[in-house]
Length: 184
Length: 182
Image (cartoon, rainbow over all chains, first blue to last red; front, side, top):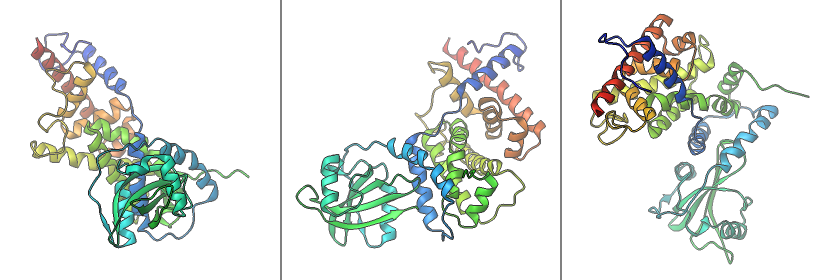
């Protein structure tokens, strides 16, 4: 559309221009929250919620109602291989939870980005959730031993599994260096 | 047996009582609406994400809810205040501010925008924060004037006047941009 005022009165746009402006503004629309943003904010809320003292569990019916959104959010996250980040040092579980939230969406899981290698690694390490979707990863050091921090989906909104496996974790062997769950 | 999911007030009451998961449902219900408000108001994805996250975290950590506004209105108020603060900071410090159109090299240039939509996004960013908030809520996202007034905590008449002045300013800005390309 033309935005040239269709009249000569300075300082007061014509009604036609204002009507067209209304239409253009309305046409901008309301974009939904992108899936990656949903996942990151959900993780931040999960970590923050962990600082609160839970008193009761969610009503079962409500909990069930959340499942679809959870799965959609988890499935929407794609992790690709990128340049490795500097390893981090863990000392406390709270550090791991914070690092895990930070690693959500990070593309630095290295060889464990390969789902087949990751599954065999997690199976060898004795992790119960070997087939869980990968939501992020980066190098991470536990008590001086370098490893890889993996952020795994659990299928529950706001709940993530943070697992650290040894650097050589694969089909032949794998060791779980640390693990925790954030959220509920 | 069918158990209905709670109202917003019931969910917030559950959350304040420590019921795990109640806030997740509030997040699910309002994330898209708050995202749209933040994205249209701030005009930048990263800024919008920061503002929405801050707003939900503030709401999550609240220990009291006065109940004088609907939960949705209350959540919007928190978000809009975050957005307004960001816009004001950006205008005070246009070089280092976080506003997408206050940083050199970011945001569409009104004089060279190739599409009307880009130009409109850019023009929106040039409105005063108070006008921008009213225009985004009422004109871009279709909130009723009364609801926008409750969110912005101003009289409905003020929402209307800010929105009207904002639209007029947008028309003038875009006309200037078109003249500048000739």
